[in-house]
Image 1 (spheres, rainbow, N blue to C red):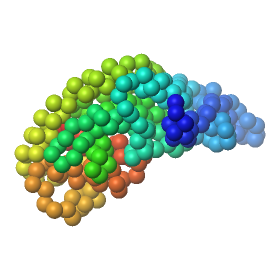
Image 2 (cartoon, helix red, strand yellow; image 1 turned 90 degrees about the horizontal axis):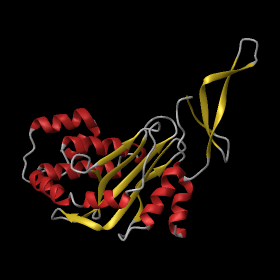
Image 3 (cartoon, rainbow, N blue to C red; image 1 turned 180 degrees about the vertical axis):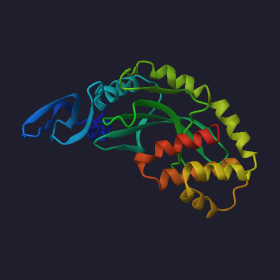
Image 4 (cartoon, rainbow, N blue to C red; image 1 turned 45 degrees about the horizontal axis):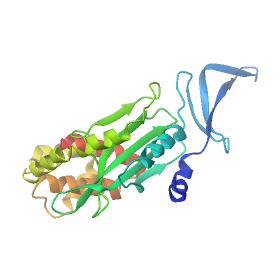
Length: 251
């Protein structure tokens, strides 16, 4: 890895460890809780979570480092994209963007991106999803319907040995993505759609839409939503919103 990449990834790679969990008995003695274990930071001892003993701890380093090795062997340019990346003690999301693998919707270039997720509290398993980022305004999107999507729970592990193949397969889907965008550009917005958006995404996002120039197609509406998610919603919450929008618009 280059020093620039190492500097960006350093905060993701803090060491974690498992420790036994004890509870206080009636006489004040420490009693082992055999069905649980604590996940802590090894560098400062901070408690991250208490998990079932069946939980398999997969450190961020065990999925990020193999990914970086795979990316280093690609002919395609890529970079760690801070736009939608974040890391906190219990969760992370890492975005890698491929600036030369783009498509255009008539307004700007949109580049393919890879999103890698992990958690230490069981809130989500390891996930690797393909999406995109709009260069014009950094709108992020997950293209879950038309692009293949990888998901693995911690108990099943993860295989990052075919990134090149996945990237090619994803890029091969661009004509399908473009066709779906063209359809959305020509679809009116029925009342049922806005009602569904409000029900699934909340009133705040609908209020944002109503404050914009009237959308004359579902694609414009889609971009209003992805802008709100990418600039107003907290980074740690964006993936859930992006996936929901992907489902609503079948993109």
